[in-house]
Image 1 (cartoon, helix red, strand yellow):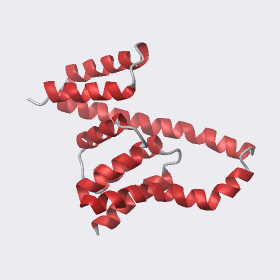
Image 2: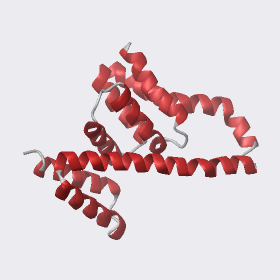
Image 3: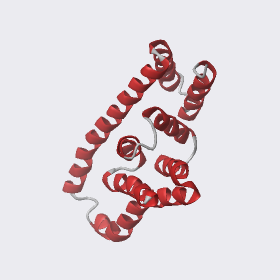
Image 4: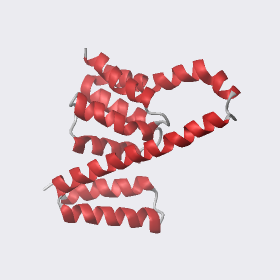
Length: 177
């Protein structure tokens, strides 16, 4: 039963999460944290941060890790397969149709309408992570990491992987006591 639940937890967000990894992260978070309660918001945010620091698609890395934590090696395989299965199915069945209508104004409008929805979902996820950080680390650590992360990314153009690793290191050193 756990493997079926793992499959559904990653297959459904893969179907609904139009746009790939970033769009499906809030949906995976709902499945993993709220629906099945395999992780807390804090644990999920750590998995997301670690997954962002590593190369490759975020959704498959998260599915592999979460699947392994929940169901071992077979759970990791099921999670990764469930993550890529919707894209694989859609590519095989709809590639010809999409290619035929790629210049259609309707297809372009549909894509333009989906983008704000993705932005809102990511904003909600960000707010939940900030709330979780505030509760776990306190206001000063949260503000310091927020301001420092913003400056590193926007002003000094440091690669996001290094910023994430720095945040993980900061948390390991200053927040583990």
